[in-house]
Length: 412
Image 1: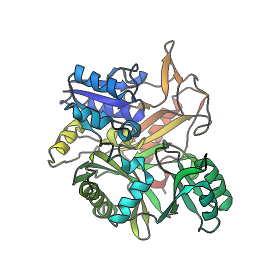
Image 2: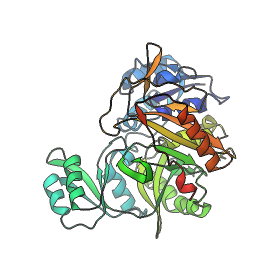
Image 3: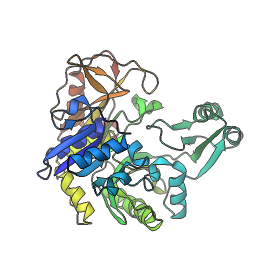
Image 4: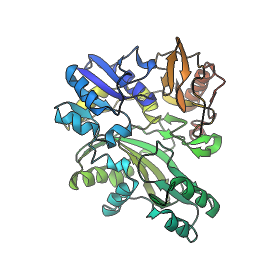
C-alpha cells in the first residue's frame, strides 16, 4: 500500500522509518517531511501541512491508502475529516475528537463528567479575574493555556510572584482562557493507547519524557528534551490501574458523547498517593516518546493500525533492549534562538531522528528549536544511556545544548 505521513519533525521521521520496515507498505510519501527523510520517503516540502486541500488532492492523485497524521495542528484543524470525506483512511482523530488535546477545558470537563482521575481545576477567562484568583489560591499551582501551545503553554508557579508572571505570559490581552490546576506530586510517565471508538489497546511498554530544559528538571517546559523506555521502576500494576481508570473510560466517554476517537491517544499520567491521574491528553504520538517506543517496537506498526481499524486483537512485540533518546536543541530554546547553524557528524541509519534541520548547500543547518534526537540501545537502561550519549558526542555543532541526565530516574 501507499502511505502518506503528515508532519516535519522527529516523530514523523521515526514513524516513516518504522513504516519502511513493514511488508504491508509499498511506498511512503511525506508532507512536508524534512530533508533527513529522503532516504526512506518521497518528501514533498513544497506542500505545507496546513494546505489541507492540496494534501487531499495529492492523496487522491497518488492512490494513498492510509494517511498518518503526526502533529496536533492538522488534527485540530480537521485534516482527518477532509481526507475521510474522500474515502482515504486516516490514522488520526477527527477535529471533534482532537479537542481532547486542542482544548484543556474540554479535556477537564469530560474527565469530570466521567470520574476520570485528574487534578481539580478552575477555568478563568480574563486576566483581571486571574490576578485576583492567584492572591488566594494554594501553591504550587499549574497554569495551562487553553488551546495548542507546542508543549510550552504550561507554567508551574511556586508562589504568587511566579503566578503573576505566568498570568502576564498566558494572557497577552485581557480576554483569554487559562485553566488553573492543583499541582500533583509524583512521578510522570507516558502511555500510548491505540483507540477505535470504544475499543482501546494501551501499549504494554511505557516511556518517560523529560519536559524541562535543563538537568534535574530545572528551567522552563519544552516540547521534550529526551525520553527512554521501558520504565522498569513503574510496574505492571500501575499500567493495569491506568488502563482501568483512565484509558478505557476516556475512550468510552469520547465514544458515548459523540466524539469517537481513531488513532493513538497519548496519556500523560502521574503516579500520586491516590493512584495514577491524568496530567494531559494528546491526540497523537508523543514527541520524543514516539522515537524511543517505535525504535523498541519489534512488531509491525502498519499491521497494528490495520488491526485497530478492524478492532482485532493487537499483540505488541518489543526488543529485549532498552532505548534512550537525547534531544539536542538550539541554544536559547524554548526562548529565542538562532537558525542556520551548521550541524554535522550524524548519519541517517535510525540512530538519529531529525526535528529541526534543513539542507543548505549540501550541509545541514538548524531550522528549529529542537533539532535532532540521538538514540542508544542496550541490554539495560544504563547501557542504552551510554550508547545514546556516545551518539550525542558524534554530533558536531557549537549551536546546540542537551540534558545530561536523560533516564537517570530509572537508575536511582
